[in-house]
Image 1 (cartoon, rainbow over the protein chains, first blue to last red):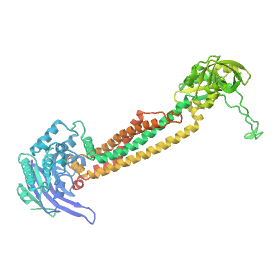
Image 2: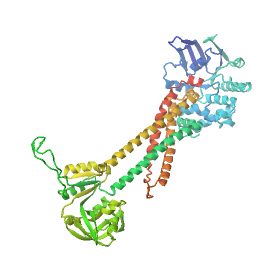
Image 3: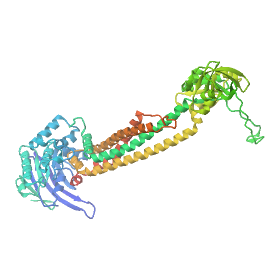
Image 4: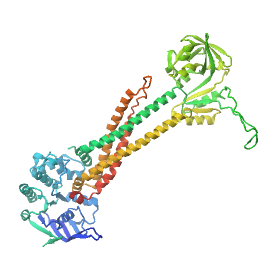
Length: 227
Length: 408
């Protein structure tokens, strides 16, 4: 139990509750992610993968069921506490890299720490540069986000996801928008981070070849985890 | 990256910098609004100051006079008069009752700066064949020169008034063909006559005044008008010119005098001034509103454009309060920077207008009043308007659901 990061028990999610158009998209999900896991989340479009990812990432709340992070039930936390827990525990990598275009690569990487601490410091800057070095982007650290290639931006996004030393990185189709070479680079980067004792990963992907290179595949079909 | 600047300020500044076209346009809008306000306020302040200066250096703030003599008709009973037609009695020249006591009492008041008793009446000025009727004012030079700056109006000679001296207007001197040092005969209505020496010529910038003004020493006037030991009026200046009416009412309540403040005697000017201030306030309010709507519109668009960034920041742990501050800061910064540019534009326009707008005689139309407090108040107001206008977009940004925002 000591290395359990996330536990979902009977999680459901419905939209338009109380209306005739009420739809349940997740039906009783049970899932556990442990420290060191490198998990692929697969499933057809509309199966509820992104909803599940948002619930695990504390961006959305389950309609019923329980989500515990490090054994702590998140259902009773207020918005500020959830925001804080999210910032400290979970890193995000989105499909469309989602860097803030007004900032440089290094500043984007620093951003999670900056919003937590309030302002910059030499240590924060040094850490951001070291993370960019890890993802092989020292040379473009001071480039504005739009002045980088898609693959570079996605690697910056991975560096950013690691800035707060999260226990879990949630990646929503991180390679879906990249050519196969860049996709491979990005995947290998995540694998390396995971292998060197860094964060656990939960990666949403449609790419079976990539999924098969993960430690475990969780398949969601029609809002249920396929055994 | 600057390590002192808090993250919300940094994000706000970057957002403004990145959307520089939007920022420039809204800054232009704010600047023009503030420029109009600054220009109008400064010009009105100049005009007001000019008028007040002109009025208050040529007349007393308060003039104490003997009360009007009124007829007291017999009454049969309450409300029924013996004669329905009550004729107003003619007002003979009288001295202010107990004027030394009134003078001392006024002088002892904290709000009062100068008190100067005068004896005035009409007289005839004769030199050779020429004679002109004049309005003669007998004054105590030491105090009267502090009430009306006669030395400032001297164009020839000196402002000296011993019991044998007289100061007259330039047009009057021309009419009787006299220059400084000449002697003139002054005959009062009572028939008393004195020969006095012209020590100075005065130019009030007003032909009527220049043709009729004559100033002599108080004792000379008293003997000429037959009022030895009496005065016809007491001039008072106060430290706060706008408190003149209150002080006048207090003096009138405590002493048997009629007290006319400059505010009462220039009522027409005051109502014109009030109308101008009201118009100016109205313009300020509407310009302020249009600036506020402009800022709000730009920031609402910015929140929509930035919704993905806001979602990402939320996902990365940014608190709602931080995101609210990002937009409030943008509103405040736009207001502040716009007001500084606007104040510079407004003052520049004022200086230019001042240099080209002239009266018929080439004198300035209004004095240039460049008041730092006007710029400061414009900056404070515009910043406050900016922050207020940003409130709605800021709340909207803070309430954005990160899932929806990221999905776009």
